Amino acid sequence: MNNKVLYLALGVALLGTTSCSKKLGEFQSNYFNTTPTPLETVGNNVPATITGNIPAKFMVKNAKVTATPVLEFAGGSVQGTPVTIQGENVRANGQVVSYDNGGTVQIPFNTEYKPEMAESNLYLDFQVDQKGKLYALPRVKVGEGIIATSTLASAATVQPAIAKDNFQRIINEKYSADIRFLINQANIRANQISAQGYVDLNQQLLAANEAPNKEIAGVNIASYASPDGSLEFNTELAEKREKNTTKFMEGQLKKDKITEFGELTSSFTPEDWEGFQELVSKSNIQDKDLILGVLSMYKDPEQREKEIRNLSGVFNELADQILPQLRYSKIQASINVIGKSDEEMINLFNTDPSKLTEDEILYVATLTNDNARKMEVYQKATQIYPNSYRAFNNLGMTKYEAGDYAAAASDFAKAKKLAPNSKEVDMNLGLVQLLDGNYSKANELLGAAAGVPETADALGVYYLTQGEVAKANTAFGNAKTNNAALAKILAKDYSAAQSVLNAVPNPDATTYYLAAIIGARTNNESAVLSNLRKAISLDSNMLKQAKEDLEFAQFNLNSL
Image (cartoon, rainbow, N blue to C red; front, side, top):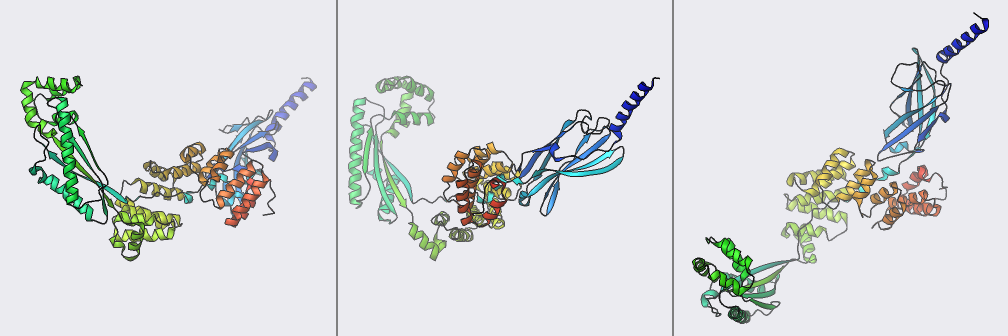
């Protein structure tokens, strides 16, 4: 063999051997980039993707590298899922990188966020296996810090659902009696005045006139004629019945010395075809379908009567069973029962709350904005009405708002036992689960509470914890809360987010902190500083939080 050819063959062989036998060099930070940079929470997690661009002549053909992402922070560290990177000659299931051409690798990372991770560094650790020889390579830094804005979603600020009282200041009651007439007559007979129906009506009017908590709101008289005979005659007859009944009632009210009765109104119906049709449909008359067919076929009153009279076999039954019931005047009294005044109920609660009904004592709690006072009222309600799920639910609501979540959960559980199907209770139990991070159970309970107004805000927070920003915004709808504004910030709709914050009824430190974040993201330094000052004035802890928050990394906060 020619020496030159021999040396060339040896050189190629040595080159191939070198690419396999040499140790792997050190990875460099500039081989990698991390998305997002800095890291950012999505819901309550920190997801990221580390992309490695490995240069040519680096990845030794027989080397297998285990790359492990590690997040380090004060007081701890979290390892991600290891990823295998391998040379061309390695038999494994890793991501292959060519020695000659280099290649790209993907290393995912995800961990649950903890507040102490705000100041942290993300590294890659490398363990090399090269034909059974194991060695480690120096770690490289691939990320720094975490923006945790999404974790500002707070179930603690969601308003629990109240189980409402049914107290009504004025309850309207209606009482009625019928005065019946003989055929073709309009005079009021003595036996109608002595009938039990009219006697009961008269007693209700007398009682309402005497009772201090009742008032007669009005008396109405509606008079009718049966639809047999000519329309002209029946019109005159019905009108006479109306006048006679009205005159009689005016005299009765005067006799009973009832002077306050609202308004006495009256009307008449010449031929009560509607009443006729209803009575026929409910009767056992054999040919009632035929009669009802006539009513639907003919609209003219006189034609109707003619066709029905032609049913000679049926008309006698109508005359005996149906028509007499349509010759009458209906007297109806409208009486208002007036409940206790706010002042009366408050005085009773302070002196003898047992004299309040369940709805009244629940209503008393709504007369104050002081949560401690509400708690006192609901506590007393549970003692007087121990089977009231509403009392226990609402007591739990006040404890939740006071930050006593364990006690609130206990009261909600009692309410659940008393009313297993109450949607308000399901919503509040779901809120407790959400606060505790039991997201699957929270979702189940909030779903069961569909239709309860307060559920929208709770569901919005749930979706934010899951990183589902679009669903969160849908759930919040037009809510004017910090959580609703946060959802719009995460959707990068900063103008809408600011509008929501401007409309929050009782802005707190978080309201202004979120406004400062909007200022940072829109590069408005004045908005950043002014809103942070307001936030810090309401909660001094916000100063430390802001200085550690990468949302404000580009701003000088020393003036705060």
